[in-house]
Length: 370
Ligand SMILES: Cc1cc2nc3c(=O)[nH]c(=O)nc-3n(C[C@H](O)[C@H](O)[C@H](O)COP(=O)(O)O)c2cc1C
Image (tube, rainbow, N blue to C red):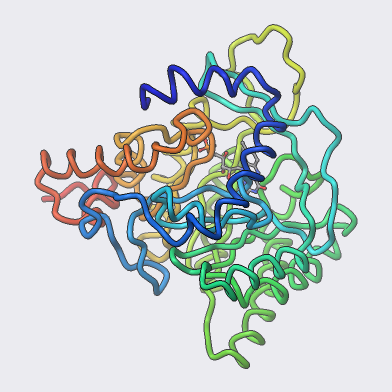
């Protein structure tokens, strides 16, 4: 853990309600973004961390996970901090307030967060305008920016395909890749969309919208799906097979878990349902990545997310089969220097283990060399 942030700043921030600090931080970063976004904090050994994935260059494999900057308010700031890519969202076709608070809480003993946000966001049209504004200022696309889309609460499950397609139409022009999120535990019924027939309908509608976009722009946008860690093995296999059949580019493993079993008792807990992220999710997410990698046999790019705090955590996820990784909770606990610290740690371990480029780590635990 970076000593200064962990010792002095984090205890101060953690005294204030989590959502209040989140909003204040985003407001500050949003204001700083137009200036700061033109610069870049130095990240050691960058060339060796770079890879080509999804038809584009990722200067390092460490991304900001969906949910932190839902409305693309501080996109340029994330590349300044060293993130190799960003996923904004979840964005829904219609603006919506999300669940009533309190809806996010820290669990410091467990290095975890619990949340039941419920896709609070200003809606696809407004987010598209924000992205267009960053683009106009030359501040979009310094690193790949993925857009994560979800179902509006007002759309029932049968209308989900049209709802996802509407978001796709508005946001695809600005997205380096698009993620279909069917795995948040905080929108009633959403996870049912992971069931193969329903998911097929959503993917078909999104792919139709992407084809239309490609017809006029000439640009094909990669499509990924994000899954929950609480699916059974058979359910995971069905999603992986469907993703391959439909020609998706990748899969994000995983969203937060519904399993609160590993959390320590917390006096004064105010959020008692929703998704758990951070350390309690770490092993489950890694084993799921391994399972998906074995099932997909290289036909899907895997983005590994869940409980990453250190370079060794990144290594473990990549060795299990992830080409790229993301963090949310690790950023809250590790602070603004966490990406650069992880990058330095990755390089040091690559040196020790004789690894030239970070891509050589991918799948090394699934298919051991020799
Ligand atoms: C407060 C909070 C809000 C989140 N919102 C979203 C979201 O809108 N869409 C999404 O796909 N994932 C969302 N996530 C899940 C993260 O993207 C990530 O999959 C999960 O937190 C596991 O990673 P971590 O252990 O590094 O936090 C959210 C997570 C947290 C903690």
